[in-house]
Length: 138
Image (tube, rainbow, N blue to C red):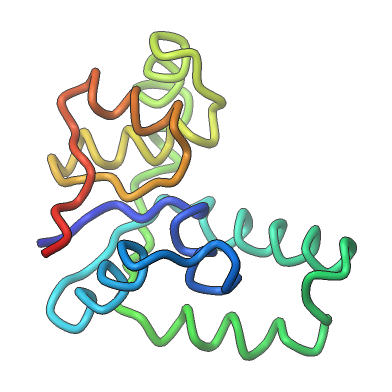
């Protein structure tokens, strides 16, 4: 089943101390499935990699391998997201007390009517309130 992939969930695939059996199963599901992300996702991933480097979690030399591994996955960047940022996403951010960034993931899941994979409790709760579940991991 297709799903929207939040940056927090994807980076659990990068940082071993954040990985769980559930995050691994969802990554493995991409053999047959596809993930969707809003257009801000690559920038958000880059920002997390930069912060992790500054904190000494990873070395700058690892960036290209991490990005290549993420690019190899069937992750589709939604081209419609920018037009939604000032409309539906902003409304969702206000309604659910989310950041505009997090609301972009929720807006995409609501629009596509597919599950939202996130490790962020507040975003997961907002998704549930909007009728969006987490992906079912067999």
